[in-house]
Image (cartoon, rainbow, N blue to C red; front, side):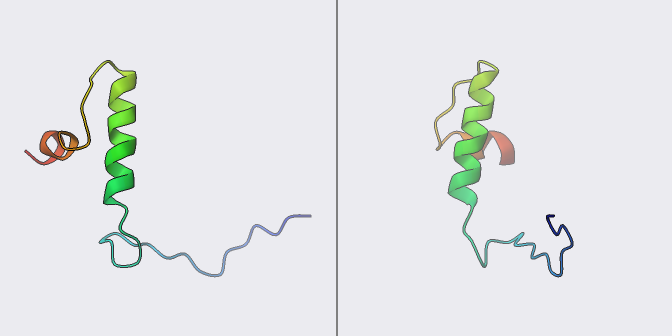
Length: 50
């Protein structure tokens, strides 16, 4: 039997624990490519925060 109860969940929304911006940018570029929008990692943040 698998125990599915959780005692603690940590949300790192500002990147203090893990700097996930690079991973997020790569994932966004890959997701956008599936819809035919080819952006490199430098262009993705410009599209989201312009």
